[in-house]
Image (cartoon, rainbow, N blue to C red):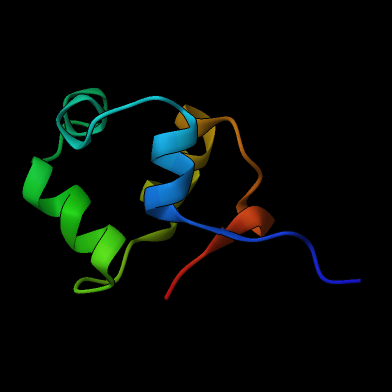
Length: 65
């Protein structure tokens, strides 16, 4: 059975965070967070790990579109 998958944006919203808050916590720009969410820029594995920890979701739950 496939795990339930959500987008980076949905994970952020479920964590009740704004892009600017995520950017501040990860020492990135809000534009970088937006680019990840829009699929404009590939996200590095370490950054995905940090996002998942911040959003409190397993990597298997994240859909990268």
